[in-house]
Structures are given as structure tokens and as C-alpha cells.
Amino acid sequence: MSQVTAITALGLTKYYGDFLAVDHISFDVDQGEIFGFLGPNGAGKSTTIRMLTGISTPTAGTASISGFDIMKQSVEAKSQMGIVPDISNIYTELTAWQNLDFTGKLYGVSKAKREERATDLLKRFDLYDRRNEKVEGFSRGMRRRVCIAMALINDSKVLFLDEPTSGLDVKSVREIRKLIRELNEEGLTTFLTTHNIEEASQMCDRVAIINRGKIAAIDTPEKMKRVMKSSQSIEVSFRETRPEVIKELATLKSVNSIQKRGDKLHLMTENPSKALRELGKYIEDHNLEPITINTLGPSLEDAFLQLTGSKMAKEIIRKRGRG
Image (cartoon, rainbow, N blue to C red; front, side, top):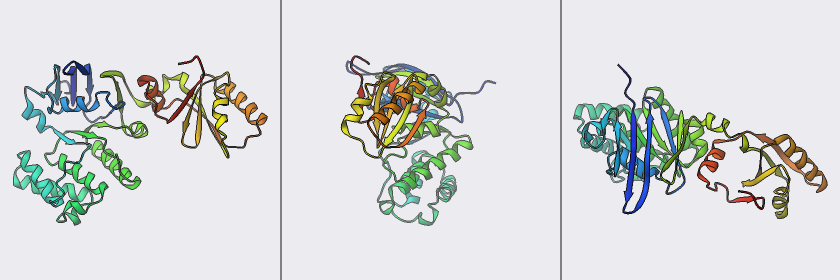
């Protein structure tokens, strides 16, 4: 018997009036996979999730969860999934225990099973000792853990996470990512939307990039990086960077463009060795003091930039007459 995929989208389409938000997209998510869904704002990410989870009716196409059609078999499909929205659905006036218990009731989970699952989840998420405290006193990281626990109270097989680490401190981000990995190791399928390119690169087995309602690419993060040979770069930082340095470096013959990322400059090039020679001469001629110089292969961020045309850095200076 062939394995049923966890999530299937086939020709999924959504119009809002005359506006085409999602344009006939198709993809499968394997059972036990962490699948990343990336795209710039307005690309169709949220609309896709709303259709996959049965919140919004597709204009055309179908979606299924563990083989159950989300529209025709909505009860069965929804029983397979847990949803953690980007905006917290937690009830702050209730305790952590009450939030899980209430969510379990909504899913139709029996009292005995609710208590068993709530106990297990709160212990696992390091919240059991504070189970009887109102959530309004919890940190953002703790609230996010409660939200994930609520989504798993029905023993869901597929977890939808919308920007799970957005706005969290570094410690909480690490805790949430660790938790997601552990759940995945136990077989939980995770559909993850994120604006954090590095998070997707670290967490996901495969990534889909959506832009203007269409799937631009689906592949593993590493394969996406490897196919982008033209997006190699040299990363350089100087002890002091005069404003004109960025514009002057953009005129180097082997440099396609420059991206400013924090205190570092990324010189995009198809020929790193030649670009290094030109950069070295420029540094010597202008008496600059570099702090770091590194050659870098293409990143998932570079793939995202090329496939969506978005500007992830605040400042991208291109040579005149190019791209």
C-alpha cells in the first residue's frame, strides 16, 4: 500500500474579486517532513494556509490532509491537523491548563484523553509547574509554547506553524526550534511559514518559494543554493566605511551588485577569484583597513532574492545598465 502524503495541493487557486491571490499551485508534503513556505509580503502565503486548513474556500483546485479532502471531508481532515497562527489564539485570562482543556473540548477530545494529553504536553514544554497560572503573566516565548501545545492537544499528525518565532527573544527562538525538531523526529509533519531565511535553511527538509501567487521553486535548501552559481559573493567589512566606498566598489568589473547587510558588504560576482584581486587592489589604492574578508557560496537568501526580485537588504546598489 502506497504511503499517503501529509498535505496535497492540486491546482489550488483563490480569487478575491478580480484579484488573483493564489494561481493554480500544486505541491505535496511528505509525512514526517518539515516543509518551509517562503515568500515576500502579499505573495499568497497566508491565503494558501487558509485554504489548506479549510478556513477559506478555494476558487478552484483541491487540497487534502492525510488523504482527506479539506472541503468534502472537512471533519476528518481537520482532525488530523493542529494550527498555530502568527497572531496568538491564546486566552490570556485563562490558565495554561484551561487553555489546553478548552481547545481539547473544541476538538471533541474526551475528558480523560484531554487530561492525559494536557499533562504530557505541559510537562514536555516545561510549563507544567505553572499550569494553574493565568497566561497573561507569561512571556511571549511561553505563550508561543502554550499555543503549540494547544495545537497538539488532539494528537494531530500535521502541524501548521505561521511565523512561529516572530518577535521572540533569542532564547525562546532556540527553544521553539528545538521543540519543532523533536516533534519532527517523532513523525510530526510540519508546514512552516517564515520570513526568516536562515530559519528555513536550518529547519526545513524542503522549501517552496511563492511569489505573486505562483510557486517559483520547490527543493531542498542546499539544492537551491547549488543551482545559483552566479550568486557567489565576497563578504567584506572595514574598520571605517566612507559613503563613497560602496558606490566605488560597485564599479569593479567583476562585481555584479553590492548588498549592504549590517556592517558587512556583499559583493555579488560570478568570478570570486577575479573579484578578490580587484578588491585587494582597491583596498591598497585607497588605504583601507579590512576587518574581515570571506568568499561565500550562494545562500538560500540569494535564491529567494533571485526568485522573487525582493530586496532583503535595505541598500542594494547595482551597476548602471544592469538588472
